[in-house]
Length: 543
Image (spheres, one colour):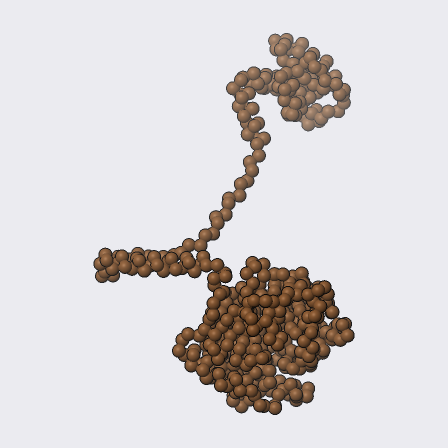
């Protein structure tokens, strides 16, 4: 006996109209029941119920009709199938009666609309952050043993402090950078008074490490070690550092990321501090023309000149354009070459007429990171840029055509480019994690050394800048990200490590390095305002 599934499978074409007529003759009592089927690809428009004619997307009732017709045509004498067909017929009649009900039709239409509508996901809007001034909590007058009059006086002072706070925050940049600064406290004046006579007298020592031969220099560098524990000389992360050329007082000048500067006596571990700028101080140098003066350049677009004898700090250049920000400077006689980050230009400012006239040299399309004059020929200056170039420019023609004499490209931006002692070589530090040495002569640059060096210190460290040893052509130093312990590295011109300045007491990285111009004294600044001093002696007085 064949199974029911075999009977349900369509085995051959069936004349569905004749099968329905046979079924209607056997069930004459239900003569109104008719089905709509398809035969040979043609539709019968006269027959069919409203259920299938109105909603053509329903496929399930059509399959039921086919099952009824096929079972009827295959075996008419089977009572089981006849009863099954009657039940199916009754269900179809029930569906037909339900379609005629208006309430059900309305419900179905609403259900279809609800299913067709697609809800769009609405992302909640972020709340805008607004800075608010948090005032101190009010305390009970009874607990503070104060009367109402005393409380009114306290409220008046709090309101005045609040107004002063709002005025300081709403002050414009022009109002903040104007004016002359000085060291006002008595201890600071005493400290500066002791330095006046010492810094003004020229040094008479002939034992300058710039005159050492390479073997003696290597031996002296390898004998350097850390003198004492790190000393905190400034508030925040050190971003720039320089050493005075005096040999009687080893004086360090440092700038941090908050705009503070510090003068520190390394021999006595004493110093003074001053809030000189609004934000990071990128470059600090002692004057080459006057030993008692120094220059500081900040990202706030200002350059200042400090005078130890006069206890003053005046503004010599300020850029009030929001796009411009100063990044570096270099002293050239009575002028100052100032690198700008927003316009990619270099400006020459006369220090004798502060913040008045200047000359603009358009050099790069992006930020100029460093600028330096040629050590021998003052007509040329060197720039490094964030767009991946270093260029050599002629001061006499840079304003007219802005065509570089030498232009060397890199895959990524540079952080620094410096001349060697005689100007024969250029040392570059780049974001492509390389340190390169180029030989520049006859308007041509040729790479002679490339070192793989991790220069990405992240947001918590200052930028790495490899520097030549002062007045040397064969050695340079740079910070390092090596651990256990932390260290600073000294390389020769061919890229080989001469010595690593490291100590177990050196617990932090030192990306900012300064070397004394005459004595082999190397100082590194870290991210917490501390310095690490390395020298080939046990005490600075012995050096």
